[in-house]
Structure formats: C-alpha cells, structure tokens
Amino acid sequence: MAVEAWTGEGPLVNSGSLDGTPATEGKRRVIELLEARAAGRAHVQFRLRDWIISRQRYWGPPLPIIHCPVHGPVGVPESELPVMLPEVTDFRPLGTGVSPLAQVEEWVNVPCPVCGEPSKRETDVNDNFLDSGWYYMRYPSTDFKDRALDPERTRHWLPVDMYIGGNEHAVLHLMYARFLMRALHGMGYVPTPEPFTRFRAHGLLTFAGGKMSKSKGNVINPDTYMARHGADTLRLYLMFLGPYLEGGEWNDDGMKGQSRFLERVWRCVQLAGADVASDGGDGARERRRHRTIAAVETAILSLHYNTAIAALHELAHGVDEEARAGRARRIDARTLVQLLAPFAPHIAEELWERLGESGSVHRAAWPEHDPALAEEPRVTIAVQLNGRLRATFECEAGTAAAELERLALAQPRVVEVLAGRSPRKVVAVPDRIVNLVV
Ligand SMILES: [Zn+2]
Image (cartoon, rainbow, N blue to C red; front, side, top):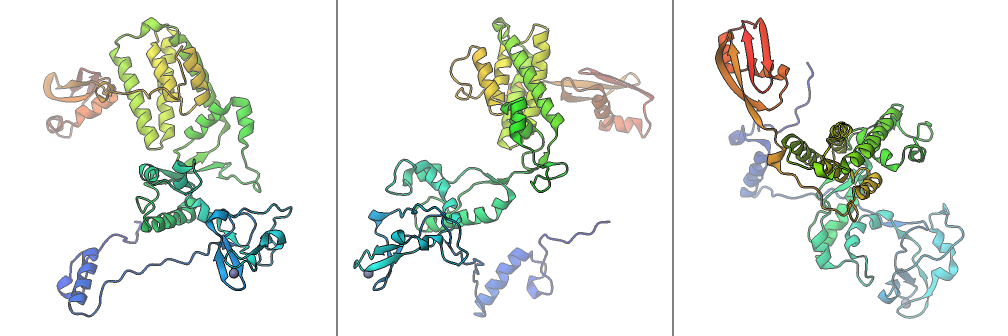
C-alpha cells in the first residue's frame, strides 16, 4: 500500500480549549487569545526579495539619470525622454562590470540639466523583465507617446483574460508582471492588482522520447513539413498530437493523418457545396451539426484543441460519406468550414470562397448552436424477464446493444428478481427492448 504524506488540514491537539479546532480557524483563534492577553499580535511578513533592475549591458532602455559632480544624480528632463541608445559597432559586454555604453564618450558626456557642469550619463540599462513585465498594459494604448496608458482603455481591457506561456513563465515573468501590476495598482494607474485572470502552461513537444535540443540532434524543423504538407496541416497536427497543456510526441504518421483529413474536407465541402437545394429539415443531421458546434466551442474554450479537431474529423467523415452518395447538405459543409477556420485558416478561407460566401470566413459570425437541438432524443427501453415486463429505463436514442444489456442488468428490480443468477440469453434491441431469459 502506498503511503503518502497528509497535506490537508488537521485539527489542533494538546491545545486546551482549542483541541479539535481545524488548523486554519485555530490559528486565527490563537492570535485572538494572544491579542486579548496583550501577549502578541497578528503580523504579516512578506518574503519579497530585492529586485535589482539595472544591468551592465548594451541592450535595454538606459536609466534616465545624469550624474553631476555638484548635484549628484539628476533625472533627465522629461522633454529629453526617452534616452535613446547610441549606435555602436560593438555592443558585447565588456566583462569588467561596466556597461559597454561607458565607452561611448560622446553619448556619456553631457552637461548637468540643473547647472550645466560637465556630467556623465548613467550607463546601466533596465533589466529586460522590467519591460516585459508590463508590455501587455500598453497594448490598448499604442497610438500615443505622451503617456504610457489611457486610463479608460486600461480599465476596459485589463486584466488579461488568459496568459499562456511555458512553465518557465510561471516563475519569473509571471512574478515580475504581477509585481509591476501591484505597484501600479497601488499608485492608482490600473484597475486591478492582478494582471492575468488565468495562466496556463502549454505542454512540451517531444521527439524520440526527449525534449528537442540541438545537442541531441532531435530537433524537428517545421519548414520541412510546411513545404511538404502545407501550414494548415502542420497547425492541425500540432494541435492534435496531444492535449495542449500536456504536449506530446512528434510522429510523422500523425502528420499524414491530418493531411488526409484536409483532403477529405477539400473534396466533400466542394461536393456538398454544389448542392444548394439539399438543406432541408433533417433531425439527425441537424443534431449532428449542433453537437459538433457545441463540442468544438467547449473544447476551444478549455484549450482542448485535440478534442475539437477530433469532432471535426467525425463531422467531415459523415459529410464525406453523404457527399459521395450524393445526399450531403450544404449547411453541413458550411459549418464544417467555419469550425475548421481557426485551426486551418488558409484552406478554410479558400473553401469559403468556393462555397460562394462573401467576405472572409474569419470575419463571419461564429455558427450558433441550440442546446436543445444538440441533445440526442431519449427513448424508453422495456426490460422483460422470461417474457414478463420487469422494468423500464430511459437512455439516449441509438444506444448500442451491449450498453443496453449493461443498463438493463443494473436495474434494481432486475437485480432483485435475478437474485444472483445470470441470464442464459440476452436479446437487446436498440431503442426498444431488452429480453432476458433465465
Ligand atoms: Zn549640476
């Protein structure tokens, strides 16, 4: 038996009147008791570390400070901001602990903004995290330069709905971004203290069982596959090869599968699209269409792109069979193209045009689904034992015989009457009846 450490909450013990109190509540009550006796008080201790934002290298925004022998460090006047990097031929770090900018004399030597005495610019630049920690705040406000953020737009757009990065982002970048957002929130510039509503770390793509790396020689070059199969196939394959958050193993055969899928879509959409008169009321096919829209939508929102693509495979398979038999519906082909558009944008756009639609498929309204229409109708199944009706149960129409048998044998009344015996014979007729012979 595997024994694991208990990581949940436990009750207090050996604590007098607090014995048995859950730990979280217990901590609060211990503090109350101590405060009541003036023996202690609650105190929040932050474990923040210092963040040194200066770097001794070329690439980065120079810190806007001028060192005057009389006035000490003086801020560069706003009218002269931003301080631009000088053009240099060699921007490699010097390895001396001094920024390479220190060598550019005509840039370094400037008069003091206060007294005009010969002074020197600060030659350190910002840590890149200081910039990457807030760029997303600027995105809604890029069309002016006199201030960083427009408060109205910032309030409208922030916080960010979803932040997707590698696992390494979960530590460094995320921490710096949150730090800056909190600071700016404290200063009243942004509406909330947290920059991102959700963070999801994407999975890792592996090949030959390992993380791709040049030294191991197991790197896949996407250009090769794009040239052979096209960008749409590559995109589909990458999204299909595993759950997005878990990643997966690269496999050339999987790529071919997506290529065949797109060939099928290409064929069936054009065949079905030609038959405009075919869009009639058709319960089963309308249900399939609404179900696929619902499935793709749910999958996209939860980042399960592979599930969405699997649903599209199924729809394409059905439409293709119908198209070959000359009974496909144009609306199914149209919906297929729309649902495919986020995954295979190029072929979807081309097919959209071939369907005679105007404008871009990427600007067309996303197809809507009606949950009621997406539901399988339910049927009532009768369970007979030696010719006598013993139970009925409901299930989805079209439920397979094996599943019906399982459901029938699980009916309480049937269990009771069988009293441990196994039926000699079972005949299950989908949507109708299960006959048991004992
Ligand atoms: Zn001065």
